[in-house]
Image (cartoon, rainbow, N blue to C red):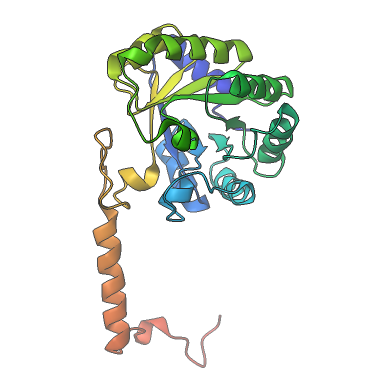
Length: 270
């Protein structure tokens, strides 16, 4: 069982202790994030863009998300792992939502699931999944899975405050343990957070939330050219990786690698 649980996050909110969250999509990254002390790992459908190179999250498939969730769960068994339910995996009915949420725990090894929105459909799905005994994280503000409906990626500003407050309260009533606030004006996110009894975790939501999350590929500098205002790069790995590959390619072409120290001799043991 993970040493960090949904109860841990609730205690952090009560104590005013910031929650640290990141995405991860593979075993190795998840293992490193756990060693570094991350509280929560989201296996986000952002994987569809950050890893698979798609333009949106809309084509993220359930089977692929389950496979990545399983890898992350194996890499970070002591961390709270949340599987992001992709577009099409919960919209049809409460029964479909519960069935696929169960798969995230039973097959993916996740401890909880996340789904987007605060409308009647999303509230019904969240409530049904919680009633099935599965923790649910909500997601308000910018909703990537609703991109076609909203017409683009837009920051939610003060004119959306009352709606966000109402949706957050409704999600709490449905039983969610936390709410992601994405691309929300700072004072708006702070006011929503102040009215929530569950932790809020922001991405592009300023400093008044209970925790922060970033897409790991972005904060490590693996997505050159992508630089939204909220993103801070803590490393610049893309040039380092490119240089390492160039050195490898050069040494192979110059017959420098493999060297004597990299080959097996006839008398050596395996």
